[in-house]
Image (tube, rainbow, N blue to C red; front, side):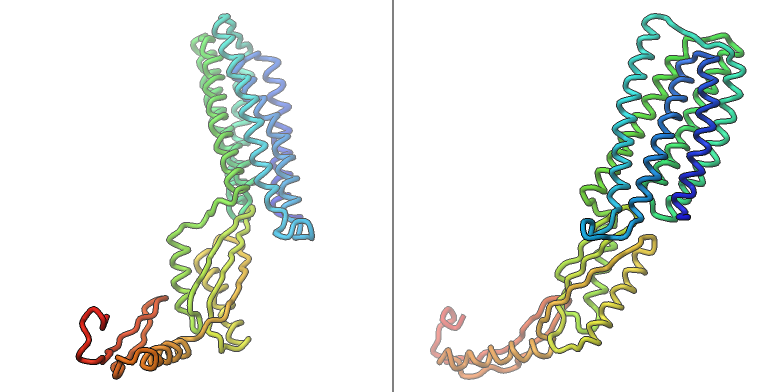
Length: 344
């Protein structure tokens, strides 16, 4: 079984158990902050099911209709989760404000509710760390986001636990809707970030730092028989990167040399991007090598003697390259009766 699907199923089982416990807790306590926490857990069931579907589809190989694979479904899943969370918790914030206005503060059987929250907190904390670790290891945005969501559930559960402790020891109930608003605001902010992450992948935001790409360009340019790096582009899809390299190479090299260049580039990519699954697409265009380019430049310059009758001779001719630019150094001997302007 795919490791992502395996951990997704484990997370789904744990959350179903939590949902049953919290649903009982809501019925027994009637707490608004508990309701906020419970609704989030019920939503998590849908989200993990969506995550499992996203992971399943994203693992399918490329086909005729999806030539770069199905990885974008992972990002769409994250975006949908963000949109749903913002809408639901916006509604919960509205209800909590109404409770404050109407002075409707209900928290019953707080001791029983506290026990359920502590059990849920421990389950969430342990499972969230496992999901985040596996998400990073397997480069899955959905698993990382689900792990992050469960970790935030643990932190939010602490707020509800504090609320119930206050109710048990101090009989203060008016803080319950306030805690509900705080919880909902935290979830909305997290959901907005989740949606933004999904959008960034969908619109192909480059996840690789510019400094790394520039270093790769420099090292590729320094490979034997490479005259220039015309393009180096990156496209991300879930945990996979597509690297598009367009090179100018010497026109006299063999297929063996071209294959060696490709192998060296892929080796460089592995060194610079060890945490990504990278598919490298390399395009090579022929360009005169350094020797042939120098000869062509020299021939063109010497042909100027025939075109311009005032040129007696061309001496000290030297063609050299600095990085990806060529420079020419020479001395032109002209008739001594020419003005400086005409000589130029």
